[in-house]
Length: 374
Image 1 (cartoon, helix red, strand yellow):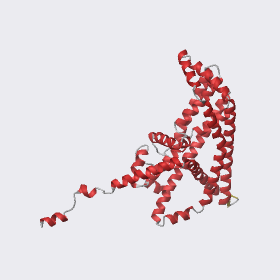
Image 2 (spheres, one colour):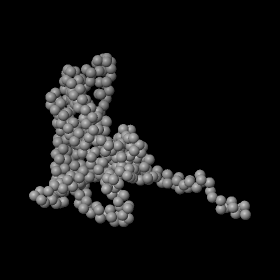
Image 3 (tube, helix red, strand yellow):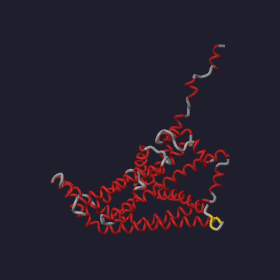
């Protein structure tokens, strides 16, 4: 009897709560993560344009919905016309932007040898305040840099800008062709109504957060670029238009982009002017603009949209720049925000969303997303 009682006696609580397949799941997760990382690195030549196109598609989709909500003489704008207007507008802006940057890069490359020579003199003058030996060592270090390789790389990048712009427009156009069938495909992929509703909730959270982030960043970056253009014109800096465009683009990169955007006009002023006072004036003006718009206006408009911690933003910037280079810096925050939203809606991955969040309360948890859907 005792032997039989031992056989039917329940296992201890620790043994009952232990998942025998936990180690297998951990190993499987590591393998899947490694495979995804390899794919991201090896297939970046088409994944990067696809990711940018997906962001543009999401943003233009909101614009299409807004256009369709407008009533003209009691009639609503049809879907095909709203799509044509939105895609044409964004395509025109992108081609103009890429064309202008490409032409300005050609101008900069043509005048760069003169600027290099003047820049060496300016740097020597600046470091001479510390000592002649330091200035001489810095000059020798600059002369050892092979600038021809960087010039060829810049020329090749400028030539590929228009090709990338055309590829993005093609991607966005085909994505809009699939947009009308999205709900049908979603219903086929998830036949269970509860599962389909859950997926719609996640997608709605991603759409809302990415829309607001991109809109706010675009508006603040555009205002920053315009103000910096005014500063450059005020001090009569060379390449004022290019400085403004680069400032607009660099402000999409968190933290590091603002620093580089502030340094650009200062470096041009340092090369262009012989006196130190105009350089300090440009530094004060550009630094003030970046501080006010980037640290006061941007957070005020952004609000609690992303709810990502500062460390998570810097970490995402480091990781995505290591995977995709400079394009990864621009895409770091939206991609990490999407990952955080997905983790917040999956119970097993919710701790990751808590770690990435600002105060331990993920903004896009189950309850809030459900309220958003309602």
